[in-house]
Amino acid sequence: MSTDLSPQFQHCDDLIERAVNDRARGLEGSEILRIAGEVAAMRRRGVALADFTFGDFAPRCFSIPTALRDRLKAVLDEGRTNYPPAVGISELREAILTCYSRDLGLDYPEGSVQIGSGARPQIFAAFATIVAPGDIVVYPVPNWNNQYYAYLNRARAVAVPTRPENGFLPTAEELAPHLKVARLFCLCSPSNPTGTVFGREQLTAICEAVVDENRRRRAVGDRPLMVLYDQVYWQLVFAGSEHLTPVGLVPEMARYTLFVDAISKGWAATGLRVGWGVFPPWIRERTKPLIGHMGAWAPRPAQHATASLLLDQDAIRDFVVPFRTTVAERLRRIRNAFLDMKAEGLPVDSLKSQGTIYLTVRFDILGRKLPDGRTVTTDEDIRRLLLEDAAVAFLPFTAFGLPHDTGWARLSVGAIDDDEIDRALERIRTVLGRLD
Image (cartoon, rainbow, N blue to C red; front, side, top):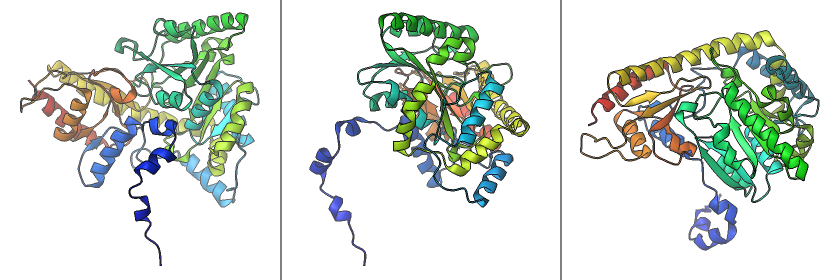
């Protein structure tokens, strides 16, 4: 017979307070995941809605490359399912260096690559290796999750609000007040949540400021300012835009740049959990034991399959080109629909997506009246209105750290069918048309 242990976990308020430390008590869950979880629960209850929330891919819409699936199956059939090295298998680390040289023009030396289970372990390892308690971490908002990594490492998080006219990406002028005191700048391009990319002058100015600041620090013996550069979406940069890197623009940035990357988005392979960091070798040496102790290793079969595909440029092109084209067309079609609504006088606007699977939209209805007389006063009001009245779910920019209610939001197109998109847009049009 089994023993029902439920009574053992009742009336434990005092134990909870004594058992959990301050850091755990103060760590908040992701607002992004909270909203996505709420929407997923509604769908499980049978609520029909168009889900633009989660930055993932529904396999029915976007499957992984056939070449990756075939390689993965072959590795499994060969029985290569034992532990990988903590730093990642040598074949994958070498393939990443080849890929970066071939596709990005970055020739990194052996000893620069750290493999992990997706990009998150490398982000955490970068923070844990670079940031000391009390150090200042600077990141633009809206942003993806940097505040949580800063909190976990007892850093002082400084959010820099950005502007739509700059694609919600920071400028050197906006970062300048923090240049002399920051320990880490966190940048992301193509950007989650905005779908925009850095312009050449914009990123060059930031990099030159970082290099100049580090020359000053080196002269007086201060710790350097490092840049965490998240480029997980770089293979999803659309025609007419270009992917730029700090090191490609200013080679001296190689000393100060920590790249994080993965197959998750560019290959629609979020569940295979293969990511990496490309770091200065002396930093990689310190992240290696950290990842090892965490056990945050990418599965060996997925590492072997990824290594093989990275070296097959034709197979990558055969997948990525039509995949990227399809995603870009979805985003373009949705944006055009919003711009048509705007031309009709409806209170909505949208930025052009330059990459990723995201579209930035503004529902400009703060202060507007609902048919029942209520006033829309917050981004959460907007989210609930479109969820309940239009059966459309999305993420407001307040979920990405933007401190003020603005109406700006992220729509993700990786897990929704084409016909769902068209019906959702019509429902949005109807709801917006009813507002006073």
